[in-house]
Amino acid sequence: MNLYAIRAIYLFEMHRTWRTIMQSIISPVISTSLYFVVFGSAIGGRIPEINGVSYGAFIVPGLVMLSLLTQSISNASFGIYFPKFTGTIYELLSAPVSYFEIVIAYVGAAASKSIILGVIILATAALFVPMRIDHPFVMVLFLVLTAVTFSLFGFIIGIWADGFEKLQLVPLMIVTPLTFLGGSFYSIDMLPPFWRTVTLFNPVVYLISGFRWSFYGVSDVHIGTSLGMTAVFLVVCILIVRWMFKTGYRLKS
Amino acid sequence: MSSAISVSNLYKTYGSGFEALKNINLDIHHGEIFALLGPNGAGKTTLISTICGIVNPTSGTILADGHDILKDYRAARTKIGLVPQELTTDAFETVWNTVSFSRGLFGKPSNPAHIEKILKELTLWDKKDNKIITLSGGMKRRVMIAKALSHEPEILFLDEPTAGVDVELRRDMWNVVRALRESGVTIILTTHYIEEAEQMADRIGVISKGEIILIEEKNELMRSLGKKQLRLQLQEEHKTIPAALAKYGLELTPSGCELIYSYDAHEDKTGIAALLKDLDKAGVGFNDIQTKQSSLEEIFVNLVRERK
Ligand SMILES: Nc1ncnc2c1ncn2[C@@H]1O[C@H](COP(=O)(O)OP(=O)(O)OP(=O)(O)O)[C@@H](O)[C@H]1O
Ligand SMILES: [Mg+2]
Image 1 (cartoon, rainbow over the protein chains, first blue to last red):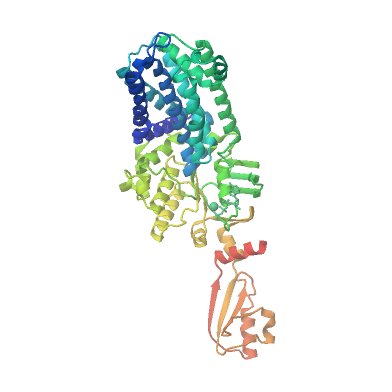
Image 2: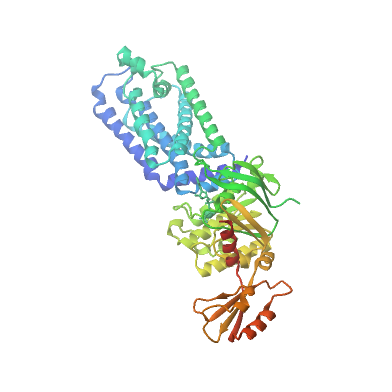
């Protein structure tokens, strides 16, 4: 193991975060807080409780997930895309590091940032809405698992993208809609049966449902199913990254 | 003892179907400075990139100090430092951070004293806390050299290190290269400045259209291919060369005032004495005589032209 390399990349990426702290931490925290203010304090009081949870509290896990997903993807995809774009990737390709070490360092850094962000958002949420966490261990597990999985997914997008447009495309066109439609703001039990079935094809539903279960003990789908689906997605991402490095896809000619 | 770099039967065909390297066989000796010359698009960068692991070889084997660059990439790459042709740096990082980063990336524990030494040698020390974006092009090039030297490589690749660099910096750079060679580092460089290869290199390889067309000791190359010229300033203008002198293969300059005789200085009979006698007989008078050795540049241009 080239531990020095892992450390160097990890610290380099974390350093980049502090340099761009406005964009990578402060702005997602502010925009998510706005939801808490609007839905939690302002109009949340007029919406009935869902499964015995006040509306303001109900949306917290979904919103944390929304930030976690989008930030993990954008952190990780940008982290690997940028060296490709500027050409500094030559150094990474010529260094005595294995793909496994590269992935650990980049994905580790991106996931760390998202987890820090998730915790800050949770703390902010607690200021605006009454919250409780019934299963803290599962909550942390979900937080870490989601951050790692979607950082890996972002890493794949970063390698695949050959322009800034594509880099923005997936988070904007796919992830955000899936998160909004994945039960961030409602329980999928509230949907008509047909739409409920359609929604079950949305992988984000399982994340949000599982995450919410760790808070309030209520969920749309069984917690085991949620964990299983997340694990499946993680494995798929690992396999894709492995293939990318084996073949040098979009990295080496 | 194995070679520093050993390339055998290397082929590279790019995804576009373009065959950039054709059956390259090359051995770089330990501790030498090897200059790779060739026109634009010859495949110099492709060859270097393949050895360094940035481009996948299509077939063939490459060993770095006896280690296969694919199967044993960790050992191979640890020994190699690369300064690529393109100036690519992390614009927002400081010089110190980016050079330290490279050292870590290549698996070496941090060593501020070594980084300090490199930065001082490359006269970057007073810029160590500056962001790279604020440096000039020549300084950025030095930062890239510092990065490549940060992990104390045994083999250093310099892909056109002096392109777009002023005279002073070029001299600095060659001093650094010489000092590195003294300390035992093997250096492979590409350049378009032939006088550079002439001054610096121990051996010279010429690549053209993806093929190595020549590898030779520099001195040997100069000797074996180095034709000399004898130039005679004539007293009167001549329109044609007198028929009696046809066997010498003389050239008359367009002005008609100068005759050029090409000969091989290493042959026993250069034919100069006979030529001078025959000139006298033909009544061609001259004021002045010069001899000139052809430069590597001329040798090189001739070689590449011959292949076309
Ligand atoms: N990624 C690529 N895909 C397809 N063709 C490429 C690629 N990179 C280089 N080539 C082609 O391979 C040939 C060799 O390129 P290379 O960069 O190795 O030349 P070079 O000898 O370094 O030239 P220069 O002196 O201009 O730097 C060129 O014809 C180039 O167009
Ligand atoms: Mg080149």
